[in-house]
Length: 118
Figure (tube, rainbow, N blue to C red):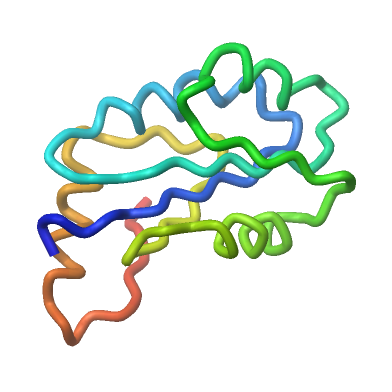
């Protein structure tokens, strides 16, 4: 599991006030391979353009309408390449080592789903 890819899927809806902290704490994760897929739900606050300008290294999908959290997650899942899928709210701040800990959990073949502790 150590070389596995984690696909982090973040539905976005009017997320500009939250996304900087969310993405910076996510991008600061070390010791694990991961991709980030942002799925904008036609945010009227120009979130998608802001993301494209400030985080061009991340994959951005622009929905034509608001599909809600589940719909946006499904759009992201359809393009995800990872062995593990992490569905993440746009207002989440990740602690250092979070993704590495998640990868360790899924190294056990008996584990198929995990939840977070808030």
